[in-house]
Length: 500
Image (tube, rainbow, N blue to C red; front, side, top):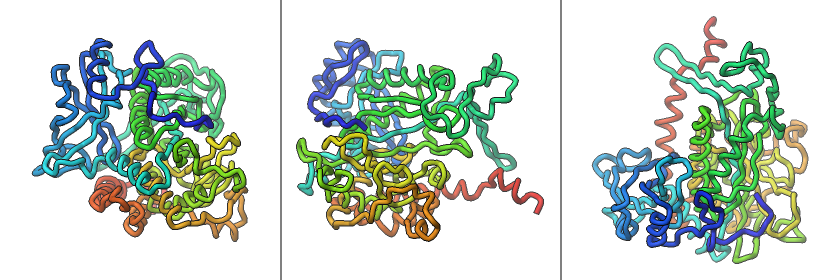
């Protein structure tokens, strides 16, 4: 996350192919002009289901008119995960013109827009639309009078593999990951896909910052960056990450909460599709590789009133204000419940274990990456003061995770929750008697969901998260994810128990 002053939404760049400073559309007429001026042939409408996957369908140009934005267009909500039952399936999508971008992936000239979901019977936004929840969180922040804007700067890590195979049925189960970069291929007769074995494999935990030829993905990441810029997203840096087998990170410039969640959806879409162009596959699964680092989504966040960063105090610890420390207190206090949205998969908890830079310890620190809440110290600029909450991972629905973190932080400020004394040492090396006093994140998704059942009042303030949304989330995760994983034999269980 950059230390530069945040830009406002006014004048945010919309990047069209061959250009890098074109204004974003402000309204329906601007979208129509963008279509006409760029030879657009198809318009794609996108929205996010409850678990956090982009859904879409496309319309022809005669269907694009002002009525589309005012009245919306219908779709079947019963076919979308976490949405409606079949007897209440009719839903509406209303495109947000400010999200329009010329799609950098489609071969046919296509303009894509992110939509808000509406309930046509109730005549209002749909309560389970993740983007609506993010917008409500921003409105709740403004309603407190504390600040106008919450800026988020997530660092999404991901893997690019050469191949992935997996399956399970009544009598077998397996997965098989292949990567030309994988350290397990040092002894292969040939490269992963033909040719001689050219060596240069990153060893476990040694993939951070090596130049090519160790880093085989430099050009692919650059292609992803250029595509993101074409779509109007500001990118600051990209690099290989710590793990072997093609772990990467591309950092976007921070933006307001909902806008950044939009950008995360675009980020995942572009990464997956550019990788596919190269006959590779990108995954945001947190822990696909055993015995090496997993992928996180460290979330930098700060509150602003106008051009003033409320998290900065030149006299405070680590140059932070009391409001910043209370915000951290809220994140740490509510972290077990937050993990239900911030680390929302069973696989997430194979990342949240000691020893792999995983932030399992609910403490705050400056510079220290073993703490859940960190104050980056790269710059002393007031604009750079922020908290980095390191527990989330990229399997999260960004709209829900960002909204939940903001609500936890605001609860910390409202109730003046102290985060405890800073732990500026390597927490993993603390003596057992000291380490035992440090709270840790839950050890499983089941524990996080149980924590959410007990601690959700901070989320429901201002009806940002409704009880219906929380109950649906918990039920979906238990029925569709926890139970199916729990009921199936694990391959390692055969190693442990077959001969009992």
